[in-house]
Length: 116
Image 1 (cartoon, helix red, strand yellow):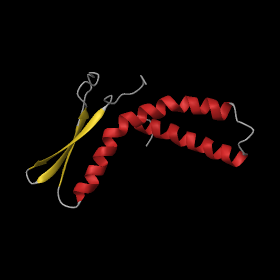
Image 2 (tube, rainbow, N blue to C red):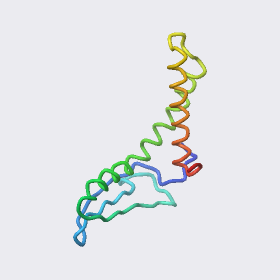
Image 3 (cartoon, rainbow, N blue to C red):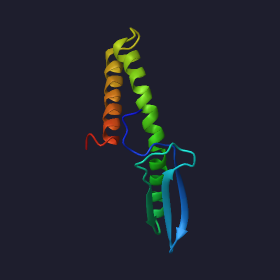
Image 4 (cartoon, helix red, strand yellow):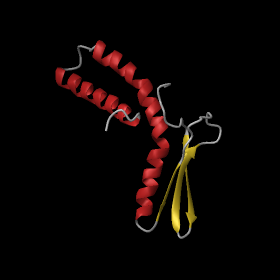
């Protein structure tokens, strides 16, 4: 996964109270590999938005792990499914899987900032 330009994982999510609001802080976990382009994300919110921002913060914290797993899994799936279609898979199922693999490729491209 050497083509990434974002702060490498793992990331962690921390939550604290500050100035009457809840702050969600997403950053590299301790012991994560050093990166010269390190960054972190903080979001402060109040009231009903806290639950939504908490859920968003957990998704953000999981992003590097999700990216790495999909990035590593994609060539395996492409090789095993697209290049060696088993006779037991009907055409509809095959094209459904092929479309899902394309969506994974698109999501990885989006994470790298290559598409909008």
